[in-house]
Length: 189
Image (cartoon, rainbow, N blue to C red; front, side, top):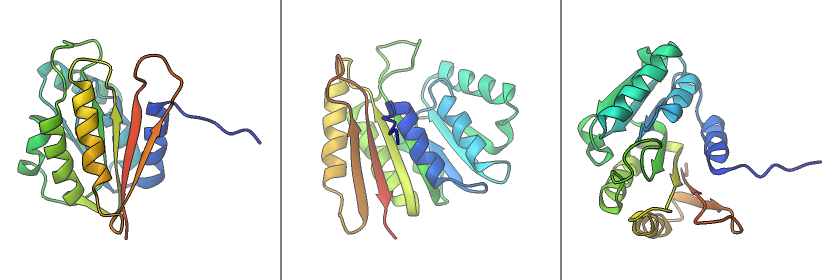
């Protein structure tokens, strides 16, 4: 029997696929080019809802175009705002969330996610997550500011009450540069 070791994106999608079902609600805290938003929309189906955040107009436009091409825009609300402000837009509980930390691929590498706003958003997301729901963070730290954000996120999740949350850190140890790592926070029942 062969065992697959998934890259960061594949592993994050596996966790989301195992958690979400049609009709669920999900959050993409960092829309980027829209690939995770599209993936979430496919998982929750027409009866579900996806909330997708990004501060960059380019990311919002890229996500809208991708969703329109795939005919998935009906069950997605794209919000041009910081993920740190997600509680201004979401009131309902969600079943899963994903964060891709770093910068917009193909965009301005000076515009990055930052430790302060990410931890603020993470705290708010943890409060919104349903029992047995999951928050997945794909952390890219190979850019200025990336180490600070990674360290702040890891400290926050390491301090979560183990009776309420299971926390996983998935990373390759022998990759060049700082390889991306996946942190998953599963809310226990």
